[in-house]
Every structure is written in structure tokens, then in C-alpha cells.
Length: 337
Image (cartoon, rainbow, N blue to C red; front, side, top):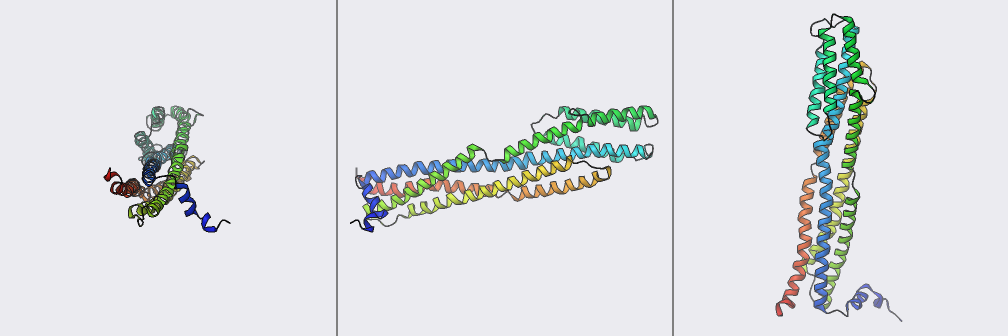
């Protein structure tokens, strides 16, 4: 009759390893530990670094560009609305009456120049349309301010440049916003290769942990040695390495998803239909939301310390097993040959 002790994991593992010599077992364990620790460290660090780069790209490029495009769109619409109000109220010839629309056009122009340094999208057409729109509306309000027919012609020309379907300034800005949203989504979303890297890392860490337990068992069972401190430290570090970076990247990914959703909300806010009186309030809301997103991105700068800690941990899970088994092999076998 088979006793429970005969079926225990310790007895079964001892029987499985029995045909192997102690030296061969230790050398095989060392090789497996080195391979698994190296694969786990490289895969995990590469995948985590990709998440960190996504956060940096979102903060440095995609968020400012999305905010800038939204602000530019609202500035152009408000400039057009201010011109309409001046004409409707008969204030075109009043000194200083055009300051607001000129300020909005200037803000739109500066916004596009600022965006141009942070995006790989071609802004030449949009810049050309904005310049043509500005020239037409300025001519209507200054050069032809006392010639109603020419003023109306220039206003209609400017309006066409602004609102023409598919090729107007607003339509072009909408397309840029869609492109920017797609790029931000692609940046913030974890890729298939990145997910595969995490699975490879976690699988390698699982094999590494089992091999460390087996190595500790061999040292105690075959060599009569107490628990090796290097292998115990490596086992503890392996457990931490399997959990802490995974939790950190999960939190970082959630953070990226929140920021991307906020940027989509900012874009949607700029594309809503607004009455003239609401545009100024919408611009204020946009400024507040943009500042909130900037603050959220600034609060997420903890990713770099976690990566540096993971880099140190990855180095240690390679070195510690090598030292633990290497010193035993050197003392008992290699040094005697």
C-alpha cells in the first residue's frame, strides 16, 4: 500500500532527480536560472519601457496637440462670431471695436505655429486657409468698412473659407483632430507585442521561481547545505518582480486611458455647436480642462523611478542565482578539477 509520504512532492521530486549526478543537477539548474532570469528581465523591462514611452509621448506631443487644435478651432469660430456681432450692431467704425476678433485670429495663428512643433501632421493647408481667412475678414473690417457691397463680398469669401464642407478651415481642423485622436489612442493602447512581452516575462518568472525552489531542494538534499541566502534572496526578488512592475504598469495603463478619454472630451467640447455668447465660456472651460489634464500628466511622473527600480531588480535576479549556485559549484566541483 502506498503511504501519503511516498506520494509527497518531496519524495516524487527526489525520485525524478535520482538518475542525475549532483554536479549535473547544479549545472543544469544554473543554466536554466540564467536563461529564465535573463529572458524575464529583458521582456519585462522592454514592455514596461514601452508603457513609459507612451506616457512621455502623450504628455509631450499628443496632449498639447489635442489641446492646441481644440483651442485653435474655438478661436477661429469666436473671431468669426465677433465680426458678425460688430456688423450686426453697426460698430465696425467704432475705435477699438475689432480688438477681440484680431486677438482671436492671432491666438489661432500662434496655436497652429505651436502645434507645428509637436505633430508630424501637415499643417500647410490649414495655415494657408487661416491666412486667407484672416486677410479676407481684415479687408472687410478695415479697407472696405465703408463700402457695404465689398464688405459683404469679403465677409462671404471669409465665411466660405471657414465653413466650406470638407475643404474649409473648420473641416480641415476637424480632420486634424480626428487624426490626432487616432494617434493618441494608438499610443496609449498596449500593443499585442507588448502584451506578449508581459506574458513571456511572467512565464519566465514562474519557471525561474520553480527552478530556484528545486535548486534549494537539491542543495539541501544532496549537499546537506542550509538554505542558500543568495537563492532565497533571488526567490523573494522573483516574487516581487512578478508583482510590482505588473501592478505599476496596470496603474500606468489606467492613467493613460484616463488621459486619452480626457483629450477626447476636450476635442468633443471644441466641436459642439455653440451660440455666439457661449464661445467665450467654452474657451474658459477648455482652458480649465486642459490645465487639469496637464496636472494629471505631471502627477504621473512616478513611472521613471519604478523603471529604474525594475532595472536594478532585473540585474539582481540574474546575478543572485549565478552567485548562489556558482560559488557552490566552484567550491565543490570546478575548483577541484
